[in-house]
Image (cartoon, rainbow, N blue to C red; front, side, top):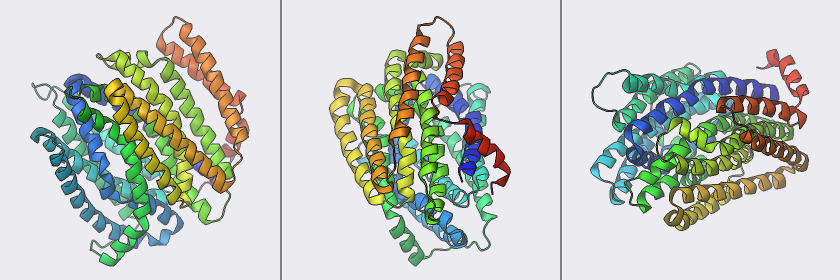
Length: 482
């Protein structure tokens, strides 16, 4: 299982590194530069608002389905047919609820039009994620990896034509960006549906009330967890746009830093996507998960620390590389968010393990405390520190919820954590000292990055955060993975 995890992780990371960094740095950053901080800040607040009611779209079905299909593959035919019809009903409920709440909190007609399309896009994404949950549950990680980058690949092609193809004389409009997402998501949905459809022997599109009630009852704990985590992940920009009357400029500055943070987070999320079905299968079979958890935690933390330390020390240079306004403000926010990324990364291991083990009560309790804390901190910090205050609120929230999840895993699974944390701390300290010295050297940022990555790779093995023997074992077993 360890071999399978690593080889599929390598595949999905390579695919995502080929596509998503170009999307973030090339397409998304260019859109910000073309439309301006105010327009993009408004869009960023709206898209995060569309995330807040995502719970209606999913109701925890995706995570429940990954765990369920991974443990009971014979249920694919029945569940795939029944859940798809249920999701159509949930989409209609979500669209109505999103529009009504947005209308009552005071969004104008232009914002409502954009929000309605963004909400429809979220509906397509939710459908794609559900279909991907079947691929993950069946351990079809190659197919799942392709689907995970297909929408961004299509969006790169479409937006490249709109941005640089000279198709229109008028300046680039944010609405074009939104409609491009719709086309990309729809094509991805059709492709992913056909992949799962081939694995079924009896697909029927019909409404089954009894089945829908059973699924919703089983998935509600997952739904609550997703809702709570979505709130404290996404509410920052919404509160910025609503609390500060500056034509969404602060939300736009926050978006610049957040997009780079999100690029890193996309790669870290791949661990959770792979580990949930793997942990679920191992726990179902009564296998010990200690080695798998320890290996995945050290691997992800090595990645997170390497990325975060460099980004924190060179935050201004990174922001200046792609943006032209509010560089200093965005770089300070970016520094905080990349520290936050370290905390988020730990939740992708330990939160995923708790989810696979069915410890939803504890996870929901931690997430509920995170929501209350995040909202209170935003209310206190935003009026004084603006977007920087939102970043601080996220850091404090993610740090405390991450620590809580680690302590829960130690309590439930009786993990021995000291040796692992000692190696991680030593690795972190070495990176800090080396990067501080590297920053003092007057040379090109690209050379510094190359030197830094070379040292980081060597330091991983010196601190024995990873061992050569791990890779020897993986290479020997590469043909045995089924």
